Length: 284
Length: 267
Image 1: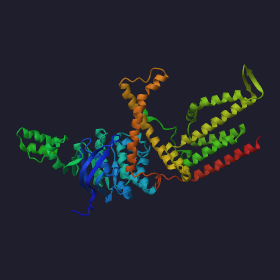
Image 2: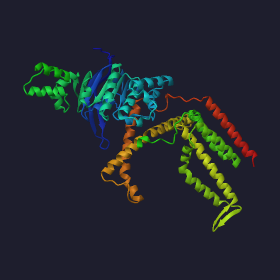
Image 3: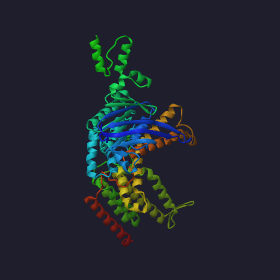
Image 4: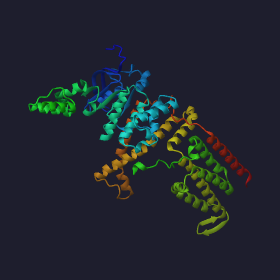
């Protein structure tokens, strides 16, 4: 264990966040005492139903929301520290759900340049970063196009490029695929994995179990609390727990469970479809 | 069909005029408009028209495209012409009931119409050859010196940029809402004007709500990308004046000098 937390990009400790309801002044607790750290370079999926607090959690990691209680430390900067607000946002970029509502300019490359321009970087360097960022999301040939002529998946790739161009150490994806068609969804997931392979820490907020299957770690949120935390294998194996949280169970796990109910016992640690096929073949 | 709308009346091209710095084009267009008010004879207008024709030829924008831009203004030109023709006192040429056309009136009417046409074509050359987004950048840069006097130059430009970006999005949104309301039996096509205006309310209310929601999302996304106003901000496409701009400015100065001479020396 590293005590100074140097290899932790994000450290969340006892995070509580209350929303104030406008008219009544009553508060609603969205995140209730969550504690976890995120390793540098890792790929973490945060899964939960609507209203589980996962989006609030995401916005807390970018200082868009300031904790009611507890602390969030991003790349060594406390998010409550006004002085380092921009360092926090530059370290942890964020991609939102609706690609339309996060694109600023009517020319693709100008939009990608928006972030670096805000950071006050030299024009030549910005140009370089924009080109590399667009290449990394495979949108290089669209750089002079107007965003409204592109598909949802392409727009989301532009939004990702806009964050990549700011050279963040960590990117928080807040349900980036929720509004996309299956093809767009696949493209985005591939790009997230590519970026992670290049060393960017990825935090994926989603409610699709299958998107989380290839993550290093899954955190499951329910009613503002982090209820499960582990590798996909550890999480998926606990079928009864997933069902009680009304989350999807991967097909292989569900099938093994069904077979077990009919007296065909396969080994307990089957999570992927390949493992299931192999186990079934061996059984026969 | 909504996806194909062109913003403003930009005519895509790579001509010498297109490549000029947007600031140059803004200054030159404004100067041209002022010069049109210095001129006071038809000889002067002929000169201004030739100058404009040269610019049009250089810009390679088809005449048809330019004339199409005149269409919505046509009524105003006709109205000014008729008003001037009848309202001027002088030697009568033609008389019927209370209407009198005078020689001076006719002269003035043609004079004003020519000035108006040159004015409109002249200023539309700016929007025809400059992308809306470059125009915004140009305006921001030209207004920057006024920022010290409290003119929010950067904020104005950012507002224009975002407005341009969201015109297609809001049009799509309108289309979606209209279809949704029509599917539930709303009728936008029949009835008198008052009724039709009333029927627009079920479109406008959701549209406004959706616009506010988009604005909120947008503000958050901009903050997440470290937007903090115009200070400390750099631009990827920094504008700089080139040789062509210098040439354009010299020609403009010569043009203005000629216009001033016309005012002084031609009676």
